[in-house]
Image (cartoon, rainbow, N blue to C red; front, top):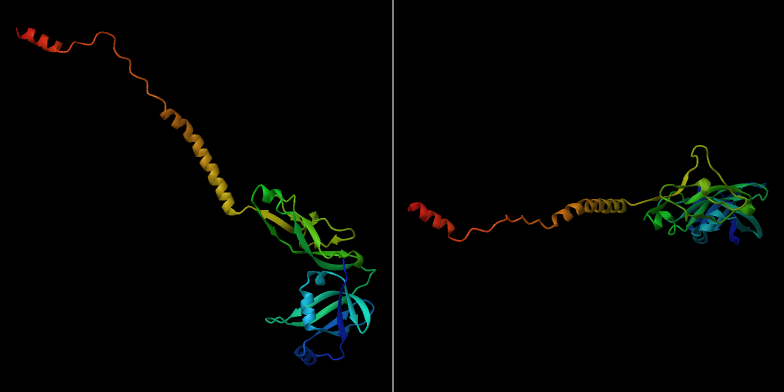
Length: 245
């Protein structure tokens, strides 16, 4: 992973009034703390910092900060934004101790959702319940992001933090209060379920109607004609004439 560098400047003035003056000239106040040194006030170019913050890796990587010719390895710890303007009010950095583990939240990158059984065979939609994960590791093992493989995700089971494959030297920080939280889950849309139920019901109705339709289509059996010669035409009239005589 390439090292991200940025430049800061030592700050000699403090207080709200000084911070406002800095912001008016395009500067952002900040502070560097931790490690063996004392907190150091700094200032940064606002526009350069604003564009740096748009880089995902700037939030989850060890950074090289140049101040007065010296380089310090730091982590971004806090950014205060204006409530409704795209303006950075203050920024905090923490010095890195190479021998001590650090706790960081790193982003999750989800892959292979399209080939999972949930999506491929059941038409489910994958929901990313978490977009970042809290980890602990030595600075040398800090990943820029963690890749989450969803190729085996099914609608019957969700993917939890304990099921995420982590890089060597990295452990997930699971709080007792939250337990083993869900990272991703798959849900079949209601419209798909209703379509499948309607198709199943239509198939059952068609199967039930098939025997009845077969019986109705069978030819009727002709009635058997009575044996013997049919009476001659006019026979009844001859008998009636004999009776008159």
